[in-house]
Length: 165
Length: 339
Image (tube, rainbow over all chains, first blue to last red; front, side, top):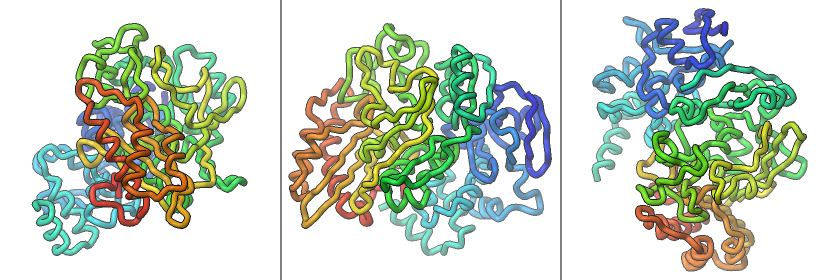
């Protein structure tokens, strides 16, 4: 089937079979391999992209069902030398180790901030729970997000202490 | 995984005609459960009929009777964060936000949420027998590892639990499910929508061939002053419930004037018992009375080898959630499934 997508602000037309996931279409057909395939079952969040501005799991979306949509992948977010503030914060806060979950984490953070429901650190943790990090960089990830949100270091410290009690 | 064809439809007539004319076809909404089941080789649709472009069921609107009609194709996220739901049905909002993740709630539709399948690990292992997947083949969960399984309404053929959080709140709110199909429109009381397993565990709900959920109606009473949703799970977020409780109360002069208690994670459908709720009427909402209501609600509970803990857990959760419903704004730490 012929579908039209706007991927990272560029119009793309591609022929896909009905069972091709948006993830596979992005990676295998458009060579946008920044979006990662982790579990391929909607459990890990590594495949998170923004579809019409909302964070979704591209592994559970059929490409044909997204015909006409606008998709943003990690390739459309910042560039070397011109990083998105969230990318800069991830580097500053050591928010990754192997990096495999990072593209999904970054897209998820952007989507979450756009939703506007994450105000406290606890809310950020809850609303980022769909992105797993097996290296255990979660504390750095939450620190990075709170930093971007303009939270004070004090809040971060008191929370970290509390969680060890 | 099998190949399938894709059919995009724009109205109910087109959808039902597609469904009835294509043997083995399935409707798809958000796809978050269906696509996963297909990837696990558990379902083998010949065709997916995409309902997301259909011309009904995309909004949340007020009803003349003071209630609300929620479109079946509205996403879980848009439902949970809708101002009318947040203000008048916060129990529903909390329950939805207790389930899945931000990404999945952005994809999943309300109709699809009601139709999600059990997460029983024997159901998910297609190398093993399962009366849901292959009727008559047996149920390995009954003698197997059954920590997550049901304690109420089980049968000799199936002890699976139904996983939706949203549905537990809808049961407590006494919602109605509006469906349309080849034989016209009808409304199904929420209580009647999901079925107990009996000897046909592969039939999980009241939908007939070709029928589509178009919307969900909420009655005017939303229990917005006294409500609580408590979800108990192995990790604090992004996990299915071991057990959950949705409680809604109305109070006057310190006594209960109406009560709803629905349980998730304990049966093949959200579990309610009117007797338990009526027991509370005219009584003070205290620990002792909630404990007695719990005893009524859990009457007949039966444990299997690994899930005996659920019975006492359910008693305690009902009491705790009842007390939390008295002060929704100051729920106990750890009790909030989602913030």
